[in-house]
Each structure stands twice: as C-alpha cells, then as structure tokens.
Length: 451
Image (cartoon, rainbow, N blue to C red; front, side, top):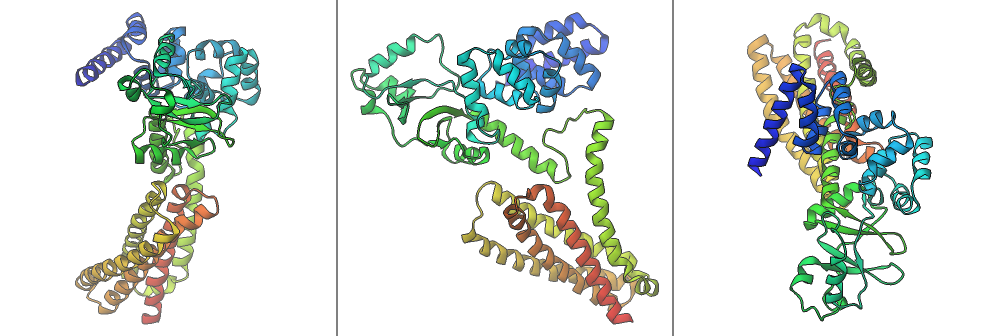
C-alpha cells in the first residue's frame, strides 16, 4: 500500500512538471493510463479554473464517468451542464445507480428527465428507485446492484448461481435472502457460504439478525450504524419490508467526510462543497452574506458599548480591558458549543443525559470563571493600580463565562428543535451573546461603581 501511494505521488509530480512545461501529450498519457480515476479527480479539483478545463478535455471519453463520480457536486454540475442527455448516459453507463443519481440531482429537472427518457427500461427503473428518495437518506445513498437468493435452495445451487456471474458487485460480503415477493428475510455471508456443507439449505445457515436499514433513515444515522457495528454493507428495505438495495462502506465514508467538512466549514458560513479554486466573483458573493450577518452582530455589540460612552470617557482603562471580557466568554462558549454539537452528531446526547452535561458545564464555567477572574484581576491591579477596576473585571469574567456555558449548551438543542443547523447558526449567535453580555456586565458594573 505504501509503495502504491509513493508511485501515485511520483506520477502526480511528473504530471505537474509536464503541465508546467506545456507537454500536453505527456499529460494526456499520464492522465489516461498512469493515474487512478480518483487521483485524476483530485488533480482537477486542485487546479485553477483554466487548468481544470485543459485537464478535463484531455481525459479520454471512456474514463470521464469514472473521474466525474469523484468530483465535487459543483464541478460535476459544471461539466455535466455542457453535455447532451445522450453524452450523460454514455459516460455514466458503467457507474452505480447511486453515483448516477447523485450527479443527476445536481442538474435542472428538465435535463434529468431527458436523461431518464433516453435510458432503457431496466436502467431507468434502477435509477428512479434511488431518485425517489431524498439525497441525504438511506434510499438516496443505496445502490440497487444486489445479489439475492431464495431460502429454500442448497448452498451448492447458490455456488453454481454465483459462478454464472462474470463478477460480483463491489463490497459484496453477504448475499441477501428474499422470498418470492422480494421481501427481505436475512443474509448469507460469503464466509458462511464457503465453509458450510454444500447440501445445507440457505435457510439453515443464513442469519436473520443482520442490521436492516429503512430507506427513509437519514444518511448521518446510517453512518453511525456502520461505525457502531463495523458493517461493510447493509440491506435497505422500503416501508413494506421489500428489499430495494444495499449500502456499502465506501458510500458511508463519503457521508462521514461530508459531515466533517460541513461541521468545519459551516461554522464560518461556507458550504461543504466550497470550491477552493472558484472564481473570485462567485466566492465574494458567497462570503458577502456571512460578512453582512457578522456586521449586524458587531453593530449590536457596538450599540451596547455606546450606551456607556460617558463611563468610558472617564475611565479610559475600560476601553483597554473590554476585549478581554468578550474574548474569554467567546472561547468558553465555543468550547461548550462544539462539544454539544459533536454530541448531537454522534448520537451521544439525549433528553436523559443532557441535564447532567448542562450541570457539569455550569460547574466547569464556575471553576474556570473564578480561576481566571483572579488571574485577570491581579494583572489589572498591577497594570492600572486600580482595585475597583480589578474587582469589576473579575465579576464580569465570571458572569460572562457562566452565560457562555448556558448559551453554548442550550443553543444547539434550541436551534435543532426549530429545524436550524446548529453548526451553521450557533457560532454567530453565541458570539453575539457573549459580546453583548460581556460588554454589558463589564461596563454596567463600571457605571454603577464610578458614576
């Protein structure tokens, strides 16, 4: 594996050198015979727009579909939008139904319908089975390419049946057992098939305790199930218990990566499909919205400061120390917020244990509040030689850390109950609360003390 990785890196290095020198013939040769499709997709995504266009044009037509499935949704849409329905069908003919469905969902409905109409009946039925479910559900994630068997046949018959296939679907670790109505019954693992008596029936050796996934289950819940039970694949059933497909670990890895990207990028207003090399105008439009929201929160904090302008005029030290109070509250709140959002994401938090976590965070905030209030008060006393300001900032630190803990713990639950993504909106609201409360407590106490 390590040797393979080093070879791939060496080929990528050679390709980059060829690109820089303008040796397009060598670039084309490496793209189409020297690199895996995933590596080609990675190279395209890692290149500026003009280079991307050149690289895509150099990819052989028969390899376009393989490369396309590894690209981000934004780039898939960009390349597919320039193709006719016949071209889309041609390049996606060898791909799994779930991968094709993911691509078509990025296109306008009119184009998607044209592609479906141009397909043969069998391919269209497979694709419509996936498109009938939301993209972020088990049904949208599943692959309809399954191997099914009946429970009343012998293992010897199963082996003869498998030998008739040119190859088995990727990630096939189990055969799915169904009745004549295609209702799911259980699974026969490949391992069990190989080591059991060929004269035994499938019913005798199959397992009925395998994890079954409803088609409507959210993809994040599917990922948790795979992680918790170390699954390689799992059958997917509809509301009536009919087998409609299966989910494999490679699809789940994509969900886990997308979820991690979402948690990281949404906290600063970016989408998980954010293109690193998107044009400047498109990038600026996306970021402008988030900057506008941030401006509103900053104005709210500034308005609070403006209420105490006379106090600040009399005690200039307050202006110097204000950022400390707001910053300490923001950091403390972010720690709690991140912990709770992660707890929600991995399924650790529930109504039964939230109260314990909430109480613990209050205690932690109290301990850290007192500790750092004393440290900051001592620094303030040595700096400004004013015991009054030292006491005021110590009290404000404690107040803000306690409010930050309460807000950071409760906010994700409140937002989720209202159908708002905590990872997207939580940070903005938390920052506003800690800034406003920090300034209000610090300057309010100073006003009572000095005026």
